[in-house]
Length: 479
Ligand code: BG6
Image 1 (tube, rainbow, N blue to C red):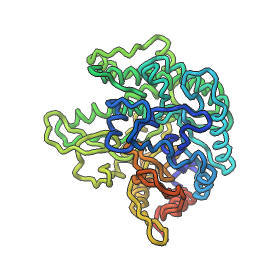
Image 2: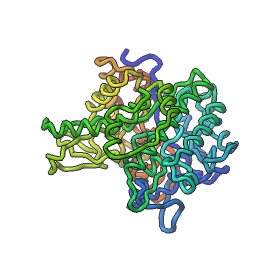
Image 3: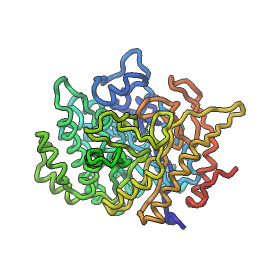
Image 4: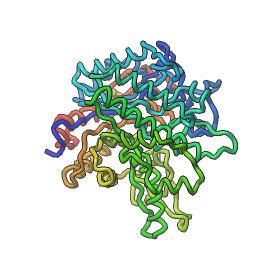
């Protein structure tokens, strides 16, 4: 048997990409709500274009998502039919604290998530909950400047205390911040940051990163105090950087790029700033405002496990190799790897890189790992008879699961589980499109928000069901 008997197979979503119902039951407005579909989305999510409210002439896909808010029973039943052992989802902070800085929570928001968790429980599905997946209340951005402000640590602590108390016994696995390193790439999404003209962007990003790291450690402390049974994980947008060539300049650049990512998990897993980060911040003249209390909290409250998303590896070229072709990736631009095929959105496809990344993370941290995102965003075609033959998705997942199995059986990586990204089609975080689909379950909705929202099974649905039923032994296409 390759995977442990209690291996947590499942799928992963985020509140803002599927819930919709953005103004229902007292929910407040969040950064993710005002990220439009279309050419200006990148400028908004990276904090270059200030859009803190809905503006005329734009379509905002998070307002409706796939309306998981009203379909969650149907959706969870479909997950259960596939045999999910776990379902990763996130909380919308603004359902629970509409402005973020209230002292008392919004009961309707708390009740909604309790209902979702109970529904999971009724199907024997273990919820895996991300406290914040790219969401930050708009009020905290307008009033406090987002995560650049230390006050957000206190608001987050209040959120953490509220949810760990309320959901004690219902949720065992928590992640503090989705893809925390995304602060450096999509800072409006990652930390509610909008930059002023002439501002030192990097300094603000590291300040926000510090505040999130401290908040994460506080949440770990609070969780363990309220319920010693819970397990807290960090969450990294992973995918190791390869040197473009064996030129020392390329190898050094890959090392630096990897350190930029590892920095976050180094702090969350080891409890202190690594030497390379201390030196980098010194060199850049950045003061993150570390207090003695921060230092103690970070040191005493490291995470229980390391979770991460994996879509592809990346490639680094040094300054002495400037003519290298660049490519897209999950918000990380890099050198184009000439040995890899790419998805329709230009993301490199690298199953062996998954095994390499699993090894890199396990070697570095020696803590259990949890793959909480992996998958292929692709356009699907609905045939006349309603069928959707997504063999390309099956192929991508099959190769990645096989690589993951090798990492476990051949390399000894300790792995808790695997959740594919978007088991049901949802709004793309990067582009705001619906047509960039990841699901085993198709949702009838297009990029402009038209469609019935009807759910239907793709070919990959039965395939993944079989993978789970055989605990990852049978990956063949089958029928
Ligand atoms: C991860 C995020 O970066 O990648 C998800 O945690 C996101 O929120 C996923 O949806 C896939 O990216 P995209 O841009 O294809 O939606």
